[in-house]
Image 1 (tube, rainbow, N blue to C red):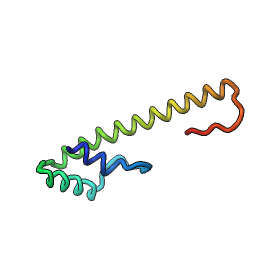
Image 2: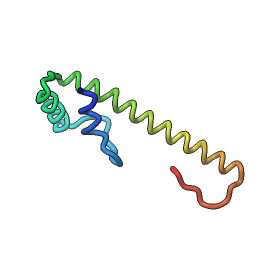
Image 3: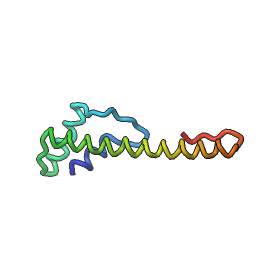
Image 4: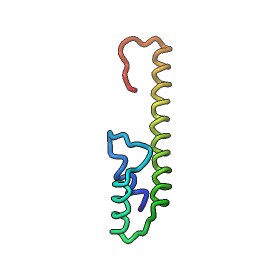
Length: 86
């Protein structure tokens, strides 16, 4: 439950989120969980957020690294023209 609420609020498509949650976001997550009958304290929300943020950051970094690798391969083969994917 905590994971779903933090992902839904904080990882909307095409939106960059800072590494920490604002007090408003924490309040919204806590209220949503209480409405479902789940008690979550600040420590649970923050530790869950840290894990989710780290996973999302690593996934984006890995995708960017693969794109750079592909770009270097294209460059090393001498492909001419504009190639943009990063």
